[in-house]
Image (cartoon, rainbow, N blue to C red; front, side):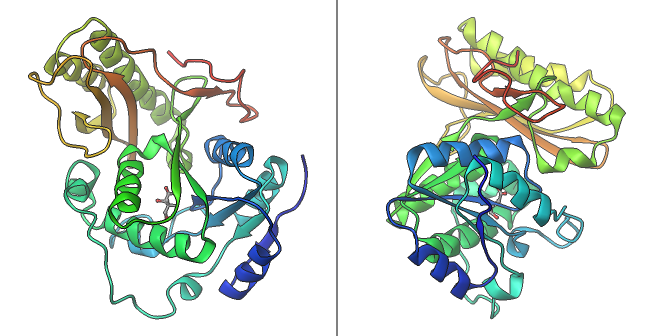
Length: 311
Ligand code: PAF
């Protein structure tokens, strides 16, 4: 499947490109620097809709001063080449001045979910994501939009945004794609040195440890202790948080939570100067499967064989 997508750099070009698409429309929002995880989102979108629009935009409003907005990798040519292989119809790649022609006077407060975990470290981040997601939904008007489970808190916030504001779009979450060594794919992995990359494997090992304890029917505190224990003994890993949360609200789950309750084990850690996040859905009191992920070979970035577990 090789067909160069139409590139739209302005709202007018986007509107023109959308006018020529008949049938259902899926949206995959990205900040570019595409990896196999993004391409998997596009494949899923392609399977469920007639047309796929991919946005590539490093959104300034979700970065705080001092974060990596300027340094964030921008690789449009390579991204378009990769998208040509997986069936994107339109790439919307605007400049910030096109998206924000005037300083927005409206801001969106996504509520309590924006103040915990990722929100505690990055207090303005999820508000900035909510703003750009709402704007791009308005510009593209998709029937369905795909987001990676890798950013579980962002996915939960987007689901809540759509529910609470009655936005006319369906949200689909797509499982994390991992390299063969268990590290979840992320555009920021390219900041890791070779040695840091080895330390980064502790995150998926920590998730596996937590899942094993959950499968043994043990309570939240023991799941957390197992996951945190793996991270804490790894040199070069500075733990930010390890938590068990409700998949939609991100409220913390504790030892009195009823068995059978769905949860997400989430973690963030700094490896060198790179902040990594990872997570794994599980069920409190057992019944969980292994680390849920699609596994890719590091060398070619292609899925190994469907949905192989990366334990
Ligand atoms: O997940 C991301 O890459 C970004 O937060 C998103 C959803 C593209 C919004 O800028």
